[in-house]
Length: 493
Image 1: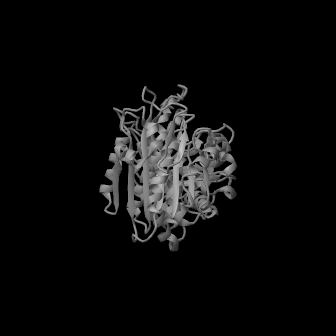
Image 2 (image 1 turned 135 degrees about the vertical axis):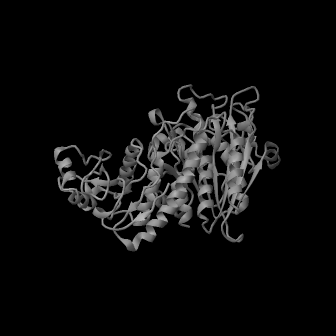
Image 3 (image 1 turned 90 degrees about the horizontal axis):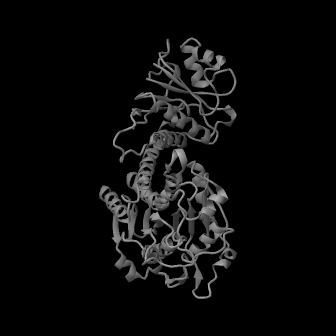
């Protein structure tokens, strides 16, 4: 999809459809006012009669507009002008894209970011426009026999009122398109059912990414390789599954070999039954999304391949299924991790931390500058911060601050939660170094505390995405988050 940057007077710019904001109050302002003058007050009349509303998310398509340079107008409610910020822009863009997807319109010019927005510069305004448009128009239909139709929008010029900032806006478009591509890949991988998106499928996708970019290399470790490395925790999770596990490694080399890489690990449980600690049946189909951490990491590597930033990044994806069966790991079993520490498995449904602990130990071999893991790890994180924020845990305040800032800039927010040693008290075991599960209270912090025991002194962050990686009910499907957050963090290094 094309997103050219436009400057010039809104009232005289030719376009098939102008996307114009409406704010509370009866007086139209900015580009909406200019177009209204050119068409003899038609738009202001629609506002006065209540046909057009300033309510956020409301839209009205006005066809065959007489006297204006634009053929038609899509009016988008944006609420109070004083509260029109980055979030409101994204909401307005999403509403516009959804409305246009029902019309078959191929080209429309957005004036939603034409006036300055208090918490967004031209770069982030353009980037948010691109990302929100792609997210709104995303459809997963590769397994349907028929397409749902419409969605012909292929060109969305972004209008800004400062020609001196056009270069910044174009950079925002470039980055937004790359991030949208990464999010699309992450969503496709996560939305595929577990009978298609297996650990081997993830490995093949990693090889495909590496083939596209000369400075990305991949290697895939089989179960016998993991056994040789002593990954007892990872192998314990996959023990009941017939589908073989894979440890996928992607290395992006954007600068000299003497520069320490950023290591990112993504939990890749392609289906999680809970193992012997079987999950209840309701919504178990959504456990195909338990590999959204892996999808995020792979989507981010795709973005790096497109943008070619001057950093080094290594991605480690432990991929497996967690299945019950006669060979499955039992509650009470004790395993030895790659780090040499032993773990008593009290709950086989606390499997994400088991595959991640070995992945973190493996990633530490690269002597990374930072070590970050991304995982749909705990329902407790959903209880703590709901479906809005990524849960952030870290042993390094500077790293945590940078990630929080990236989340704010990218409109993909995170919220920091504690990971103090006291949370590890309930991981005590009489028979092993510690257990994989503690009490229910503070469960997200307890899981993070478990992982912290495998990173030593490396600056580390754990992103618990259980609440934001996918949506349920009518809008069921993967979100592609936190690809924007992770990418923004890496680009700003």
